[in-house]
Length: 507
Image (tube, rainbow, N blue to C red; front, side, top):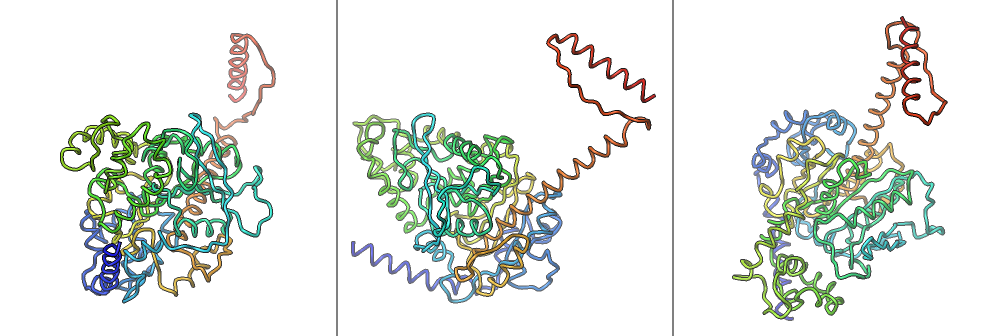
């Protein structure tokens, strides 16, 4: 135990010294990243019309001008977002010798540090078609007396999907608070056995299996039929959201979605692993959560292999890819053990890779990523640049700094909170501060909703004009049939008679 404490202290010292040497260099890493993606900032402007970081006419060089890059395929919606989402270009990351300038420390802070939130959660346990249980935690103010929201409410619903390990982070809690203050109804989706949800079946939810989420969305639509539905995913939870959007297509019931610090290429992410402190913490946390079900899980999987695994791949493969018998020798999925399960491992990711049906996504999806994300891994191999270049439904906000779901900003950033969300009621307590990524996603939701509303009004107006001024220049009567008939031939004859009479009258 003492050795682990010494190693942890050494890691913290290294991370505290690291930000200065990392962020005082003269090389522009944002430019290097865009070149690695096949872009330069000039090329990005040619592809998207204008770069979000200098959208408002700012010509100043330096850190602020290169803080954010907006990468997408040119479209009417992309131009509308650049024009109306001011938060996209107002990101001032923390600099200098401060812990908030470290990608590692701000990521750990958002994931592990407790948060005294002024909200409470009301849980709905949903019984699924196979008798399994998932839970929806509805965020409500702590001072609110009514614990339930009326089904006739027209407030939009924000479905929040946390990371795949079930940890409700500080980032998720602050997102619920911010969304609630802007008029949304936040609901956190908890998978089977996550966050205190009872495990009533021997089935655990696979990484990218959207079956449980599909039933939860149907329940939300039943409970709040009048409100729009939006979705936000955090970290590895984006795999579930992208899988759902790809499988459901235009039947997702959602208006727009946002992925915060997503992991796109999940199979390679599990295979390559993380740096040992992060991987050790994630593996330990997942083992602690599964330990309460060790006896019942032993009926279907090799629990000795599961709890002796020392990597994320080992845990995932032990849960879903075991091909041996319960009496076989436990292993840690190293050496020859990997070769015996490689076929099952590849088959598992053929069914669970988040981008397997990405061409079927039918709603706008914004991804907010940071260049220095310590969880996602190497940028050039983990960000699918071709997806944002060719698919008009996907948009990427790429910041130079921000860590993993961190996006810490300078203190003066709070002065922009009212200007950036002037069109939305804002009751956020500024003493707590609002995360930049949260303001960006709320502006994205508002802008996409306004864009679709304007498009719908334009279509209705065009239809009305065609109905009033169309035809051959004569008077056109609008008729409505009120008679009913049981025999199809007679009904068809009446319709053709009315049609022929109308043609003869308009001549």
